[in-house]
Image (cartoon, rainbow, N blue to C red; front, side, top):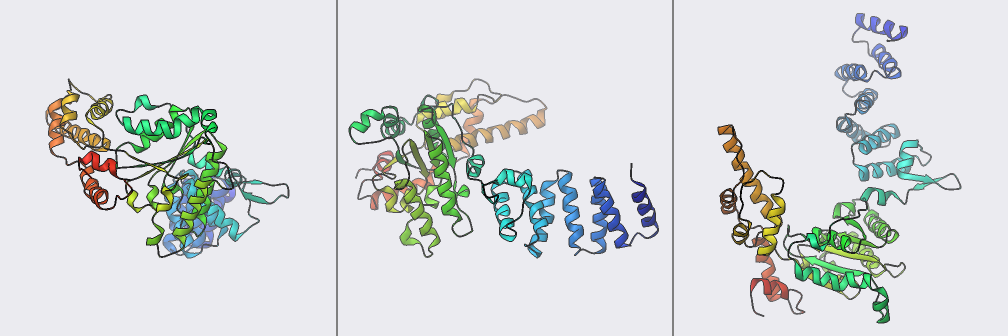
Length: 438
């Protein structure tokens, strides 16, 4: 029930609905009473009277926040920040909204901005999320943030769950798995567990899947990161993010660290104009070398669709000293992939062997697209007849005829590099797949 003071203010407001000062007093009482829907209603009226009213915009954002409309609150707050980015109250609520909305990395950046504006700032919820206190009572960014944000996994899949890709599994077994499982034998020859493998090939062919299966094979932790986890617009942050990621891997050994789209981080320095990109590459090389730190039992896998754009320094011994071509799945693998993809779909008697033969050069992503097209066709029929029908072999074959393998474009480009820029034999596997003699 509204307080007597609030009731009196509301009664007065009825007589003077355009009285801004009076309505703001009502909003203040409503906030104290936590009547957030009413706060929203009255702040919207205030903004109709004065669209530049910063205080009312902030109160409106608070109302949205307390009603769990985080995305809507973020829109209002971003408008306020564009006008004044030094308002700690606005930035604090913005950070809280981002955190609730699942944008943890962005929330951390806002939190750091708040500390730059006001080093003495404190908030129990945000402090617990992003930083800890040291013995002097001052604060620092929490070293465990990267680990919580990235999310360490313990995969249950292993090589038995990977159809085909025998040559890839064999190379990974020799370079990564056996040194890890038999460290004493390798140490006798002066080698230690760890190191890097660069997986390359057309997109959608299972590079991430094989990396996760590698972790499962040796019962290691799995840390998968993409360029968005590393690259940052602020100078120096990308290098710090990269270092933090490697530190998380080192603290959780044995660990398979998988870096996707690595060419975006390790582009050729000779093609760069600015220094920022070079600094990231130098940091990356330093982390791989492990000069000042120990990378033992950190098994590094990286994936790229464009190995020819990688800086040659990454391919030196001790770094990504082995490149493995991940080709589109062969006939056996395509049959296995289709079988798995159709497990939870309403289907009749499907000839997976026939479908596998009709889909040469299809990636795993292409096979999924083929299934999706066949499902769309079945849905159209069901809308007309009112009776859903199971997916049959012919439905998938019709869908197949509508498609061109997405790998074709990649092989057009790769063919040129394999023929004309292959002095060291890096792309011999591509030539072999294309059945082109050197």
